[in-house]
Length: 483
Image 1 (cartoon, rainbow, N blue to C red):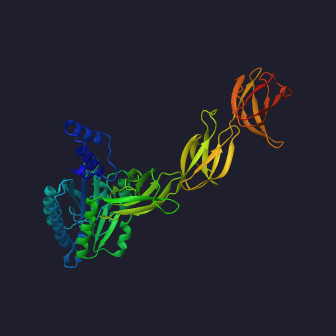
Image 2: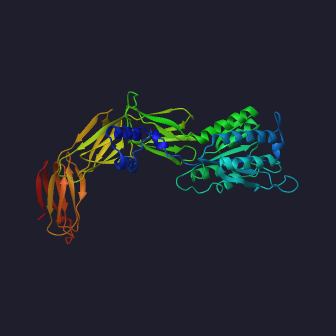
Image 3: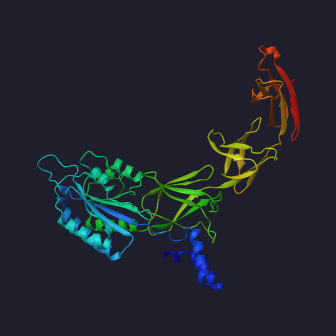
């Protein structure tokens, strides 16, 4: 049972033994563990089905010579031997299938058939499908052209809809030539990856010219099998990646280069297709180390750590069968905004210093964590308070405290337009407009000297403007009567 690989569950079982918890109580304890999904990243993940579709080139060019014989004969022999070895692994959660192209229509005479592709062996277990695939492969005779783009497009129909969990759909394309039907294999592959039909394909080039490799790098992960031995080794490497997840840990480094940062979400994207592959909440485990995660070695990743602001690391390649360390600079500290309780809710816009993009709107009397650096704050008081160059230090809390506002009640004799201005060094700075349809308003204003300008709606001349000066003190109350 795979769950027994989970240290947390083992701890619960040991604890149950010590406490002599047996019978239904023990079952309830285990059920609680399962229902609460207390499976940390260090537990083996629930296995998903892996489906591997072999796409085999049987175009006329496979009659070409390659080391000990014709390409087609060598490829048949090596692929058959490989299927025999795959059968011995007895991987019950793996299904395989075979699609061929260039094997139904002759290249001459007449126009080439650019739809010459067919699923010859549908998906089934290795034990049932491998013998069928060997039989089909051994009977192949190269005859036609190379419709790679069209064949990849048809692969989307080959993978069955998964039930009871998402499958890992993988394509292994074995070919000795490039697209010959004016299709765009790169565009087709990218579109199907973005739709989640299959992961980044593997392409094994048999005895191809070096220049052909550039045509396939945009399609998937390309391997150049220049020799028969190389072809055999590459098949083993590819299948190892296809069958196995491997382990990794993300080290979020502080300003001293130590992996001490944690408790932040992170997303692994497929760098080629942009598809989201994994989401984790970063954790420091019981040993004080970044926790182990299981991750598919297929593809190249871009990691986005959802700090404020986000940090990214691109071109991440996972080495199969090894524990991979992914280090990201993410030093952080805290910002605490403090104000007296007369503000029910006071937001503050936070931006990176010198930039206009809003990173976050943080409320007062709350903590938020930021990447170490300088920030510009725009506090949405009346009037607004601007604080540039606020510095956040490693593992420190920067506290910003503003004065308690004063409560101002404004009374009008009738409806009409009005505005409030702050007196600032013999200059009037606009603060806000009054609501013309109201005759009484209550406002929270920061301490300072103010003026209100008002005119009744019915008055049709500017000389009827009413001006009042008033002063606001921290925590004070002011009544301004405009009559």
